[in-house]
Image: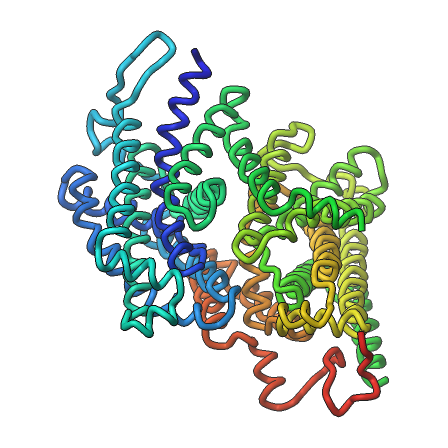
Length: 292
Length: 322
């Protein structure tokens, strides 16, 4: 029964990773770049939400809705100022530029908010503590259900957005071939900027869940980025549905690892990621190369 | 010849540093040599192999913890340092077998995860001090000023050996193919350059070099903990030094290391995160606006070249076909 419970908790944890990874997956899908500041943007979202909660005394969910336009604008500007230029100059430049950005965000947060650990859990009220005891070894938390439902809704809405709306079509067209999209009159610059805005907004949602589920500090970003990237890779890069599955696989791997020994939680997620990488990119060809 | 004599003279001058200066100056200059070594190794990967690694701290950590491990087994500290360097280099070979199959972001973050995994494994090992860190107490058998001098000479030797290895690699016929990969990987491949084998060479060299840097870090500070020695901060430093100095130039990373060293000397004592904001912003700006870095730009504008690692059209006699 403990294993069943571990898997269930892993699904809830994994839904959170999927939300974190969603923006990363969108940006890779549309622009073929990985934003190394993605985790820090999620943490920044959590901090902005925290400030609104403190100032207005509202629940974190209301505060998040207020923070959302700020994050969308931030993503849009981020593309126009940093990413657009980096896209033009080789495959390494976006990585280098966003890595620099990641250091900047972490240390600006450090200067503004001190290294103290914060949480949105208390202000979220009874939601964080409510749970149902299904059987003696199996419990379902309200927060876990909420994150899972929101994750499925977000991924479902994105699927509809990409297949049914005009902006969704232009994103897919630009992802397919930016030059050809330009030829038929699509503004690829604007499309990229909207994709970044969407990615940053969903990253902030990940930051909200991070803050409610547990704690965060100014340097939490890189860990969130690693988990998000692992979810994207496990699910298959460029596939949005894959990212949801990949996030859940990562979550389950971590909780199952923790079942063996609490200290194995993170490392078993890493190992699943590395195994997937080896299986996908190493494998037979690797052996041939050694033999030669 | 002028270049050989100049480099030789510089090496002799540097070697006499511990005889002239105080131990704390020697310690600082050891730090500078560590930075130079790290910058050169990261540049070998990214500048010549097109491999952007955010996980070279894996080898720094293996070098540092390897030294403590061997010293605890009773090996003479300085021999333990050499062994640890060899171990770090040797481990880079199996890692390369799979890591080099990855491209750009997968490689960058894949290496980062490998560093995290090794860091967690060290934290789980009580004999290596777990999460709280461990001291290299065996070095206390030497008087402080002798210890500092030995460590400096070792740092100088490592810096010279690895820079020379990179230098002669770039000067050899292999080097021409490496520079071809730097300029255009697909074009190099289509001309028959064995890109994967060349990249492996750079990856293993950087594994040895970063391992050596880790060895020097523990010898210089006598205490390590997984949180700092496996920190991604090392990658941030390497990226800053190489980007500002000049990605893909031989001299640039040395310039970048001297700049970072100067910055660390002036601001770290005040402990403000503002300098890290500046560091990150500068790295990003150089990546976007000045991708060849300071040295690359100087070279381009003035046609100046201190070390003969490139081949120019006029030097047809020295250019060898691969």
